[in-house]
Picture 1 (spheres, chains in turn brown, cyan):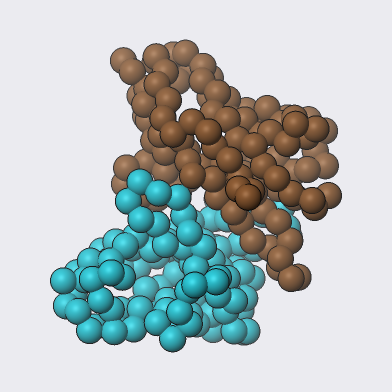
Picture 2: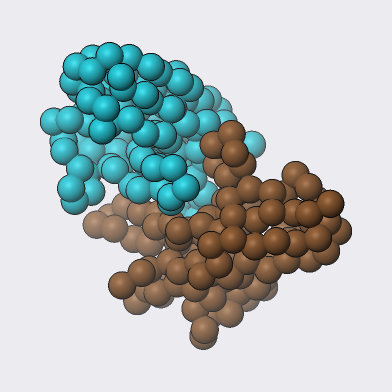
Length: 116
Length: 116
């Protein structure tokens, strides 16, 4: 079974509009972390935002916010005021414990295209 | 912010050559480093996890003798693709985390490997 599910292979958004990228996860751990990364066409992975399983507040970083709904096991990324430079692949990832260390599992990604 | 340097960024070589890729954490001590492989338009596939001073933990299906990983210090891990063949052509990307489970992964810029 998929541990991280991103159901939107591609999304379009008009410049200056907000967009939500979906991510659901599956874990039996009580302590886990959720991350979003951006991968432009150049290939590098850029860390955007982090949400801990015990965090009561939704994480925010500038134009990025994470809509964390623990009971639904969802961690959607909201990008406000989209810019052309936001066009990229976006990956949701979960950190889970793995034999005394940590392991990160990535979703299949969502390709976002911002339209002028 | 934390910086991870990956070198080289691009390699083109003949079949049968061994290729070494370096991953360095420049401004923090990386207790754990991860090596990923990414096929075009796909997600990151974890190959192995390496902790400083110990043997790497390989994911199922990843050949240990093919992909040699060394994590000799807290700032350097290397991946050697031995006797590379065209099917090993891919985008390889490393990441590093510091101590503490809530640390995000910091990624290198990746290495695009092309075997002729």
